[in-house]
Image (cartoon, rainbow, N blue to C red; front, top):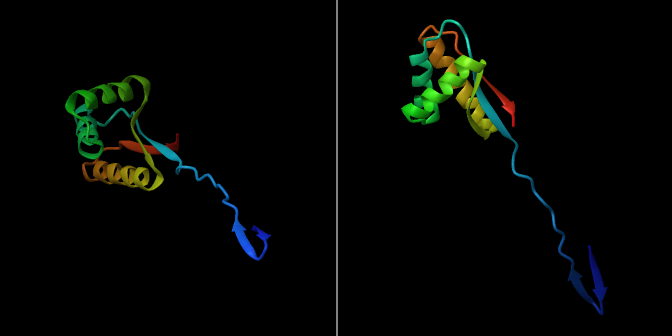
Length: 102
């Protein structure tokens, strides 16, 4: 902890490195039933994308089967996934939203 010098206590600083929390990608998965316009609405509503960016991500989901909506800390990513799933269910669409560690 420290070194004693003539009844004096000298404290040595210990450096500890804290890591930032891990980030998670929130992803939309393609299906054959959810309309493209609904996917754009989801991206605008829950991921604050403008129409142009939302359209690009929607097309990536459509063409590649998966698209990244954003990268967030775990709690926020979990909330986004739950919000999208709930919104899709309310509108009777099978749109799947998942998260994975970045």
